[in-house]
Image: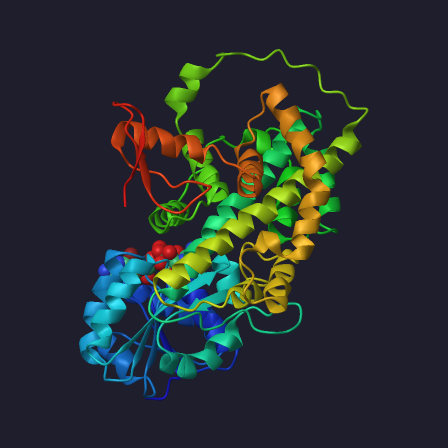
Length: 478
Ligand code: NBP
């Protein structure tokens, strides 16, 4: 074998990843179930580097240097299992199968264990950045064994995006499913961030009364400050775009139903299992889900109608500044929740995920890339044992500075009947965390009343139950 690496699955992601490898001077063997795709890739882009087309799985495996490095870029799910079943018998101990698809981390754990039993390395790898990222440098999140990373790391780091300081946006995150878990949380955070940006737009449009083109300018301005990020940048582009057919703002001709492919839902399902309250991500998933319920939305149309005051434009710039504060503060909370989830998942599965490293490799290539992530990286660099991001002194100070505007914006939204589930959930989370006393005391008492679920007391140790149906005396329930 003379190829350094192979790629099987040459739809858009696989083709672009293979081209990225070839453009970096690596000899890439390429294969696809349907051979026309392989030929098309080599015909169109063969000049970009050294491609070795393979007709069959056997050809592909024979063309690879040992230990073999084979990247699988097929549709996540049954196709991945089919490809594993096809290739595993052809591979030898020490060979590596890299799954770059959007697999669920529990599937990755299952596949890794099965292939480890056969002496093969199965490396579940999150890849973010869409087609452009795959071609020009994605953020790469590999799991799998330490040994596999020694062989794969240099190759993957070579084709990964580079952060502003030049370091590669790729790092080994932990064994088995760690990479796909981190990719899942990335997508969950992406959902939350997009929801918060969308709420900001809605407020500027329907409370401040600005037009999309004006809001695009506001986002452009924000993009030069602490909110500087890919998502803010593309939001400005979208809002400035005019629909060619109608001459109307593009955002007004797009059907207002946000779809989802499932990674946000996986994040929330997993968070519930881990007991991590990722309310920002959950609200974002639920808001997309609600947008798709056209039947319910039609039925609710006109319910509890608000008589909206005509938006006043005099105070618009002041309001935009307040929305920027609310957006930034909510973003800190949503990201902090995501990092809590990384921490909890890392502990539950013994992955030892380095929390600062995750921020470092999301600085480039991926959809949530932003200057902000470097701040998260530094927070964990200053204190690797930070209990949570919110307690980092610089974030805590910013939250404190933002909170008056944040509350004012939510109050304004509630008064105007503009839904801000992301902003409100973020603020409620913070208010809950920092409360001296929570009404959880009442809930625990209710639980004791109807189910004898017992309670602990604030003034002494022990577990107690009150005889609610009897004389209401308290007994020890240890
Ligand atoms: P698709 O997800 O559309 O998958 C198409 C590829 O899967 C084709 O090469 C197809 O071969 C192959 N395939 C299928 Br379907 N069933 C197969 C089977 N039973 N055996 C062998 N090959 C099979 O491609 P994509 O959009 O390029 O995405 C690839 C992976 O990357 C997915 O897991 C996706 O979730 C992930 N991903 C995508 C993005 C993105 O922005 N699109 C970003 C990050 C990750 P054929 O040509 O013979 O039908």
